Amino acid sequence: MDMLKNIRWLEIKGVRFTMEAITLEPEALDRIFRSLPPEDRVEILSIGAAFRRLSLEKQLVLARSKVQEFEAKYHTTLHQLEAEGLPDDADYAMHEDYIEWHYWSRVLERTRKTLDALAAILPAPEPVS
Image (cartoon, rainbow, N blue to C red):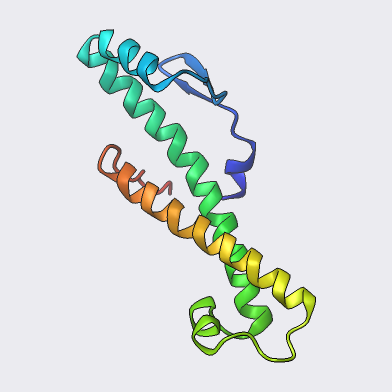
């Protein structure tokens, strides 16, 4: 997944698409999108979903590694730690880690849910052999 770090564009059918985000009001975006022919909407959605999946897969790898780092450091899962509570002798660093651990757990869960939703639009890519 390290290869995903440097992806800033995608070339499809000889056309290069950048991964730069645009900012539009939702109503304007909806109006523009609906004005397009259906086949263009499908292609835009497919290409956009492919770009987003790349970004999310990269985010998933990072979030998973952060959660695993905390699990290895404290020899437990966040769920188990919450059930037992922080130790009475937990220092400032552990409290900070606990907050960050929660953050990365939420990122991991949210990213998985979004990837699952995208799977309905775009099937998973075939592994390269």
